[in-house]
Length: 198
Image 1: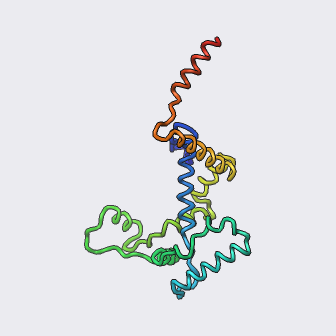
Image 2 (image 1 turned 90 degrees about the vertical axis):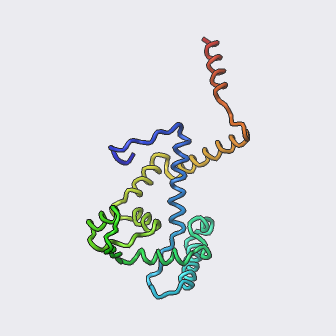
Image 3 (image 1 turned 180 degrees about the vertical axis):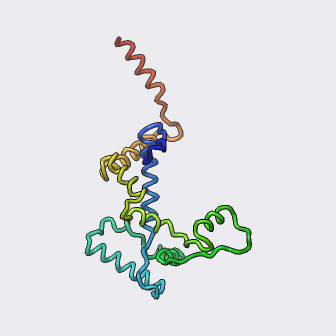
């Protein structure tokens, strides 16, 4: 764990730990790839924003030599949703939400009001939250977790090896179809042969 007061999760095997780590990293990657940082000018239409995004992706493909992995680190301009783009623009505004005066506020609302008063910050999107955490100058918790994972598993190559191991195991198990392999008999056989050698 990242904290001394937090116990590490128990795993049945290294493969289980790698599988969970791999899935968590996939979620972070998917959120970041789908998040489009809006342009500085707020006067541009949605179509103009999409056109500029396509231009930026093409520039990255040609000028930065990212053509082989461009589809893995950028989403397609056709996949950009206008509602998501509006939310991304909202991320860079310091707008507040004013609390209701009807007296029907729940416990969470009362806690926010106690902290911020009658107005609370507008919530940020997951993409913005993850991006700012990773790029934070004070090294956010997510950044530290990713560094720790990469260091424990041999850097980017180590993570790739974990993925290969999981894929190989899944492929091997798929050969048995509906009847999964039972290694209990193999263990009994190994114990028997070990006793015979003694």
